[in-house]
Length: 393
Image (cartoon, rainbow, N blue to C red; front, top):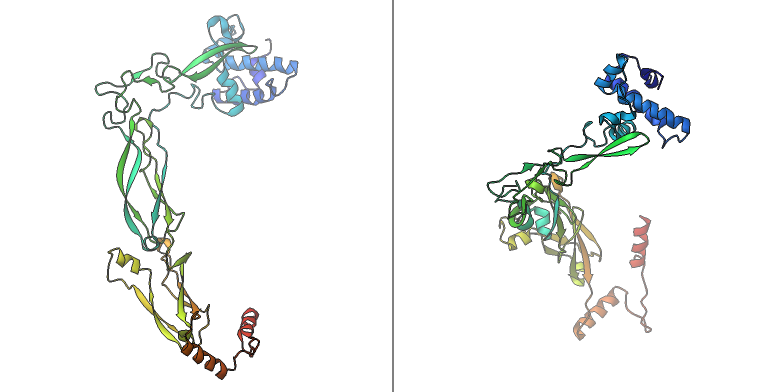
């Protein structure tokens, strides 16, 4: 190699280590055989790599600046046991070492790692979802081993530095190639990359630092939750390996169907069936509220559990009344929804002779009597007129 090494990299003779590395990265991306397979380019890449090998090593650079032979008689310094690090090539393409943490590789893996999040499902009643409830749950998760307190070692012992990697968590593997000696770092097989070994594992947890256990947990479900809502309990999930910090526990809510109310967002809907005579003449009806379910469960008896609604004379089946603020409270203090009451008019199915006679008399008075063929003459303002008017509006 007769060309000046600084000229090969395109840097000045007083360039610092960062400038030399940046110059090599730029040239390596352009000249690497995987990018440009041209033979001349490959030879150029070898020269640039050799220049970087010298100028990135303070001792070799000093020898070169003094006019000496920095290679010591061979490409890549093979005669001196030095190697061209694969880390430098990876550094050129990905902007970091092959191992990820500095130029020395990844380093040892920590034994302590965060645990996984856990998910359980909880079935509750509609009133509990609306107004909130506190529940006691049995949770089966990994917890810190009490015998070794998460250390993984039997009492009286402790982890020891791995003799194979000397605590580095990784070992170097050297291969010959056209680039010279390529050195790669791999996790140490003896310690599995931890940098330490546990010669006497804890017999309770087998060295994991955690065991599975069932425990009781008190959870407060806020008012306004619905099916699919997840309540997060920070740090109540699975304890991590090596007694690492626990993940979170998520409680997914499933709300049971109610026998009277149907929920739509924060609104409640119900259907009240009234006799035909009550719809015609008008009536006052006592209507239970959702709070009544809490009183049945032994909750505060001072709650208002019912209200009254007035069915106006002539009310038709399907008519609605809206009771403001009688629905479900919103999450995080949002406004409470409404209660929508739909009236269903019940037509009698069985009539005795007296009742039938009275209805026939009423039909005659209203001009609604049946003809001999069983047909009924519809008057203006009939059901069809009202239906048409409804759609026109």
